[in-house]
Length: 284
Image (cartoon, rainbow, N blue to C red; front, side):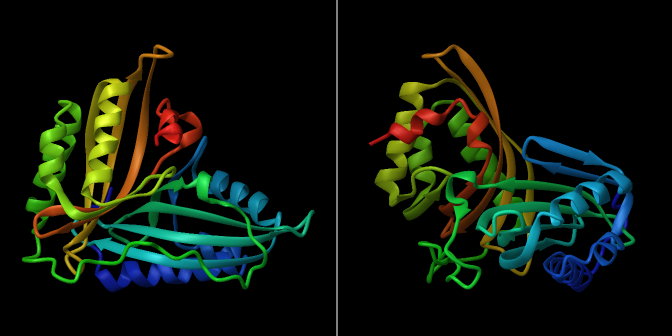
């Protein structure tokens, strides 16, 4: 649908304006930038069409007395007319007066006319929950960008790297995975946080010892030319849990950093409530 390419500033302005509209609970302003054939994919739910999305948004906002957003990260891929955002949202629940915080990310696809026609949202349920107040400090990352990242990778290099990395997981190739990891790699899935090459390699060894039929398939790489070391990988991660016989597939939304030609950061979102890989919660 997005044949024409939008200007980077057009997408950035759209994102900022619509976040402000949500915070203000201004539904007409928000819906003004939405395509008639909009599709919104929410964890465990989906809405199609302008009327359905407006009704769902109205129902949700009616439960929120006050809303605040912290836009942690914004990547804009002009070539694909897509934005990837990572955010924290807080709101006061109207019936209970309890303050909730949700961590999430989303891929936003635009038409050439600058209207949103597809929005896929991912939440980190495990790190979300009740907070003391709207004014509490925003959650801080344990990761920070590399100080000596080396030559910036091109779009093609980033795509090739991530397909090689996915192939190593699909082939149970822990050795290749280790070769692709930066010594200071940070792994932040919805469950346990891991830091350093040795700890992340241990995750791969644990996975191959406890799961079968692994198949990792990158679907799209979001590449921002203004932030070439950083990007987003949308992929599926499928495997079988031999303890239960279940075969499952997670839809990953992963922010990554490639530093000196190695993977230095991987922060992914997926629905842990439906994942067969919940054994990771018991990993030492």
